Image 1: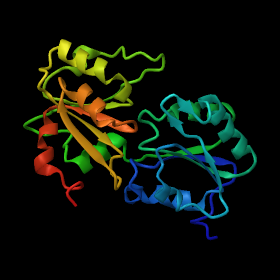
Image 2: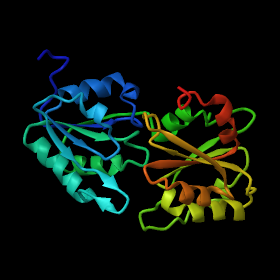
Image 3: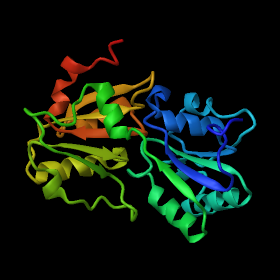
Image 4: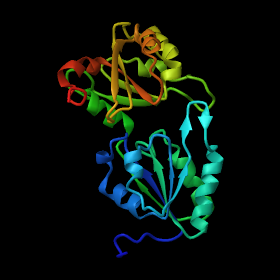
Length: 254
């Protein structure tokens, strides 16, 4: 293996795997995945991405789904330290970007405390990738002068968010992990000033062959989700840019 492909022993790379489509990986991410001794990967990392790994690489699934965690976060943190201390080159693969609702910072804090060297490789975050593949420009001079990414599921299990800020007009709001709290999200957005007819949508399995975009309004979104049976992983997008889907949707028309 030449120097470009040989990775340092005892080191961790925190790598963003993007929203699902393997073609959206960065060049650096693809190179690291192909060279690593061990890969610790999440639920949202697609099979096509894992196919890039060496045949002899150790593959450890650490996926988290709603109310179903293969490994608790503390165990994942300790696992990364252990693998690095064994002298392995370790790629920690996270869907989207590791620093946007990916708990990447928590994992790095553990590595720092244990003296493990690391690097961070950003990825295309789910909001940017899924919106692009659904024809939603997250910003648009006629619709949204700002965009906000927010979690729909806080650490304590509540949805106690800054609703006045989120319900401001002329912005796009993307809720990660919000399907289970969609009724509360829509109720609060309407109660804090957004019309019930404000366009809203859900994108499931964004950027992948089975991507599904469900269009609605704040007033109808909870019912539409229940009616369709959509389950996570999915993003909720709120704002008038959602209305551009029919015109700009390119991926689902292919």
